[in-house]
Length: 436
Ligand code: HSE
Image (cartoon, rainbow, N blue to C red; front, top):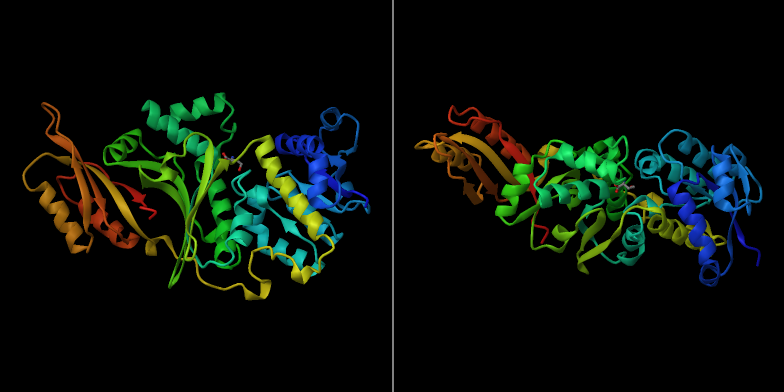
């Protein structure tokens, strides 16, 4: 059988990784897919570099529109990124009957519903394993491996840049700005790291996982997103003293009244495996009712780890190429007419435990007033840490860990605590998940 023909849009880090791995492992991949997979054309604005990387073995063009309309191309691999031209090209490829493989989480988290609907109408596949957690086959696990389960929640370290920064802050006791500069020098963080450090990249990824886990449309605009830019080194230290690590987690949880969808720095017990995922690595913890907890760990970025996911999709598409569209694995795991309209809950309604840090005057009755406010709000205290005040400085830090409560209740209590004359700083509030 003739090889299946692929058009590659963008030959940057992941594109060249895909080209190299496909070439290196072509024989084994052919044996798995049942057919060879051949990159026939590459589109990149830097045609000279593209020719160099591909060694003159494939057509190189500068205009990606020429690829998505080319009659001999069966699958388009979109590795351009972003919401603009990538959306136009993906929709055009679908319109021309091409299957699409993409690593573009931003595109699918924001425009996924439109893209999946267009693909469904046209009977083509849009595969996106590489969009979430790089080389970890988490989409496959959620959509196929765990299909027997009612998924209860997912919590993931799904951004390597921020995990690297948090690991460095903890190990070296450095503040965020210093570590960010180091991460940029080492090439871990982009020159413009906004999407990573503000939690947006993680929110794109958890949005996709949430849709697949719970059978609902992608709803990135409903996600609550907090990054790590305001995280203080002192909170990482205090958390450590209390037996916790702080991780930027993407969390989605099914509840009776809706779905939680959120990204924020989170205290996790240091004894959990996921709390020990360090550096730029990714990990996703999935709780299913039948299987219990399963943990997926690996490289969430980089040329060949991401290529591994792109090529897995190419093999899947090759295997399914001739299958009847109605009997393929659905884009969002559930059949399109079975998606539910379950609401994503506002952050005020989220249930979590909390870490609260406040600077207080070290005098009689302060603690009693704070605990009274918490008790009146129905918030139960789990643990507490009070630092000794320094000589000649009659003030100190109090750190309180709460049991589970609604976010709106803790916010109301914080407002009352901040109103006390003896509380000398705004209260730092971090969410905490036991993940058990
Ligand atoms: N920028 C991402 C990260 C990798 O730092 O994990 C691509 O999703």
